[in-house]
Amino acid sequence: MKSVLVIGLGKLGYHLSRKLNEINVEIMGVDKDEDSVNRALPYLSNAKIGNTTDEYFLKSLGVNNFDVCFVTIGDNFQDSLETTFTLKDLGAQKVVAAASSDRHAKFLLRNGADKVIYPERHVAEWAAIRYGTSHVLDYFQLDQNNAFLEIEIPKKWLGKTVGELNVRKNFDISIIAMKKDGVLDFKINSDTKLSPDYTILVLGEEKKLAKYTK
Image 1 (cartoon, rainbow, N blue to C red):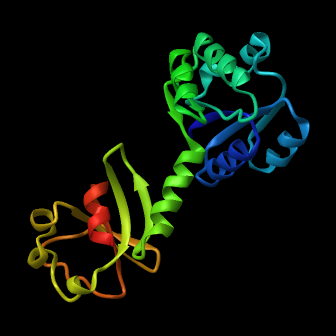
Image 2 (tube, one colour; image 1 turned 60 degrees about the vertical axis):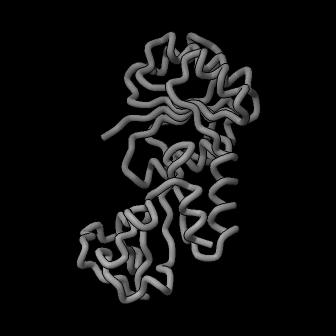
């Protein structure tokens, strides 16, 4: 079982803890606000109330014993920066910190963060793709250029096989899986026929995916 430290139990830290709990991860949650700790307590394996800019307090948590340390302090960037630096200085294996801008991200990466996430940006991008198009049901960006999309099968593709469509050659995108009633089927081959009661998971460049999902 993975062991994770979540520092900052505001909105992001709270929801992160809930999700980690769902996937059976051992979580220690930390915040200087007692109410925030109490709200997240049902999802935590352990909890501490304290100021993580205090090196001695942070050291007492045994940060090097966690597989991942999340810094999700959303209301004070200076605290986030100091906590990130101290975590790495104390030997934390992996530090993932939340940033609200590219400028913040640069400072965090320079001061010990192994990875930076942009929660607000990711939600905005997902919502724009999901609700700004007619046929996209879900979206996950892999990098600056490529993404996964769950889409309704285009009417022109219905009844045809993956081999007949040859989407990789003709559209430069790949069908990775089919989905029905919430279950994904990754056993896709050239004889797989596309039917209207399925959706498909496709992979490709965002610009090309956007072109074919309009």
